[in-house]
Length: 492
Image 1 (cartoon, rainbow, N blue to C red):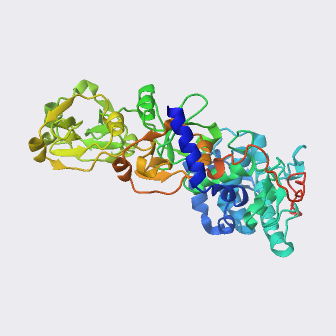
Image 2: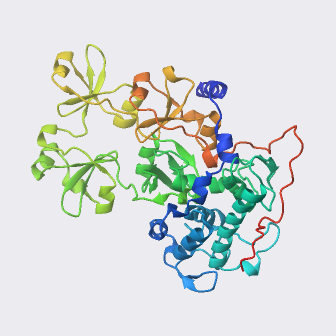
Image 3: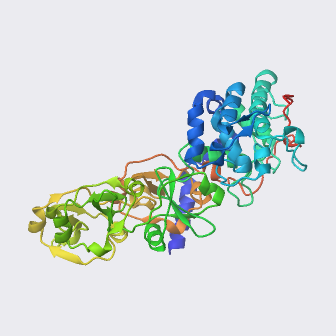
């Protein structure tokens, strides 16, 4: 039955939703402004960016194009400004070519040919261009050369042009919509992403760009699973390791889990691990005690409150200050609050259900919310008269990472992310990002409408937009040139 529903959703979505991600991904990788914004990052910004990702490039001294030893940060920033190219473009290319931003132990060859500059397809890399500084400056000036040729000649030396159809080395037909895209395909005439792969070629560049500088390929709330089985929760555009099997099982019950490659996971900056399950009481270094509920920390106001509520002192666990600050501060637990975990209550007359915490009742608008947030809890029956004495709080919301639809919105499908409902732009977007149609939950209209409408989720750089090269009845496009890197610049 679930398969049938998924099939109906897929067909209906394909019929009514525009598939707009093709141009944005294949033919428009990034904007010209983004590509040429040399002042997008200061020297300090570049260095902080590398430090935040624990990159070895933040600590090394490497030769510039003249052989002088400098910080890689300075080499990259100076090259970007000389060529009038965004430092973000050079950082993204470093990662695309050699994973050099995130690799903790890069080899000498990775560093020596950091940008893949002077490395034609099908042959080895030229010794003329060996060295980190030569690689960075060479790539930056090559990008600038492509842009200058487009402005003066209408095409690059590799015959890529804005508005002209051309075939990539892996057989995809591309029509660049701007100069930046034509320059990127001139540098790497490979689209990538074919044969079931979500990465490779310019798709890899665009994916990394989006994750680092465009808000992330996957929405917050998604759980990425590495090949070794480790699971990471995406939260505030960072990855947080689910440190124990219990934490991973609980978090994965409500959030979509997507299989991802190490290089995809590593593009997210690492945040503090999630070590504790819900309703764990922890002791901070300053002696304060907190109850962890979801992504919130609630301070236990005193030892007396701790004792009255019935917490067990032997079950209190130590937490670091960094781990504690990863949780948002919630309401302080006082004696008046009674059990801070709440009581599941059903109104006798209407059968409406609430989570009652202290003197506040929170409506539960869908059984899925009850099952995922409250779990197996005994239900207490109360009369409408008794419940009327309580304040009515905000209804319980759907948890982040849940993929849902509702009768009013069919066939559109959403993922809950940062409390918003973000619609998938197309069936292909959902599938290409690794989500499963079997993960789609059906909820009540009122439950979904608690969440404000957020941005579309498109397949961006990670999508496989076609499993085979594009076919066309128009004249065959010009073949992709080889070797890959031809700049026409003599800088060394």
